[in-house]
Image (cartoon, rainbow over all chains, first blue to last red):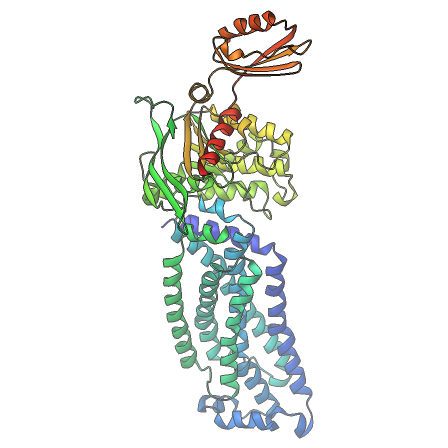
Length: 276
Length: 323
């Protein structure tokens, strides 16, 4: 395996993606919404809520959530007032699945650009005439999606820590975030989800002609995250450390199956046929 | 299929194609082709769109697995040793296939790294190549700002970057204006003279093949119609010369000039006469016959049978055969 060729492809694809507005705009805007606007809005909303009607703790659905909540979460908010509890539960737990949208979106948008985009612009043929093997080409393009997705997610996580702790400091009076389950989420589930986004994009790109087509098709994976969000909100699933590790492992298994299939079906012959 | 001449056995063949066939969706793109390409020659594959020229280049570089027959490039099978073969070849693709968001230098550096050229050597080579292709002043501009001719020069520079033993050129001047075409032709002539490099040229431009190629293979619908040097093809298909004669007045009677020794065919229309003769020696007898028939000749012009004549004759034969 020529790793130099793999990383040369990845580096080139990342450079190209950086210069494509359709790629970097969502990469800039979506984290801004999830990392800054939504948490700050929620903190301000909860802090300024007055009276029984404004307090989310008094919401009937939220009450169900509180009843079904596992013991480790009850212990966490034990001794907190209703505003503090609301902030911890909303931004520390309910918000967690939202955060998984980031690696998924980053990986699919860059992978779509890398696979379908290159075919769309008819630059793929020159790349296929280089000495790189099929596996090196595929790995290079996987890395092009994976490395930035993981790094930008980590960056967004660090920004989220600063924003959440900073904005909630007047209410909480201490640094309370991140909660332990977030480490599992960011370091284990997020890379798994990034790979999932890439694997699905690779498979879709073999059939879709354009960058936008590939991105839109693979973006439907967001449904998975919404299922997790609904599960957590309705009390069916709680993203504890153990559950996060388990979900991550499950996604990695799916990744491995999809990647195996992608490696087996990825070859120059098919790439040229679908580019024609 | 007419093989004009067998290859000299002592000459090294860089490419050997033996009974090669390739199918797409059950339809033959190439059918039972056999020929060799010699080291150091400019070999042109000539044919209309869809004749199988691009497919041949892809097969020779291991991008496709042939449906039948065998290929050897530098003695190796491209299906098994594609990576090693591609390391020693350069390909100018039909579309320039450049990364338009990157600069000319970034494009060359990327491909140089893909070919495994050591960084310090690559930096020097990139500078040399940019100068050779007169792109040094625009080296750090994005390719999207380049004209078609500049893009084609850069694509040619990329194909030449790894100092390839075989340079494949797929329609190198298609869609270029005459000035850019001239530049690209001069570059190809200059490249082909270097270091025993083999140039494999695919084109539908007959004058391009005539100007650049040592030998020509004519394809139609994946079948090889003819193979040989232009002189060999002339000898085989359309011997001799064309003689154009201008007359002061039209001839007053009908004369069958085929009776003159060495004249293959001829037409006289008004003050213009055109004859095909087997050799230059037949021209004096032809002129004598014209004078004997009261012709007053104002000019005589001779020209060799062109590749175009041969090409269209072969393509017409194929069409008539299909009817």
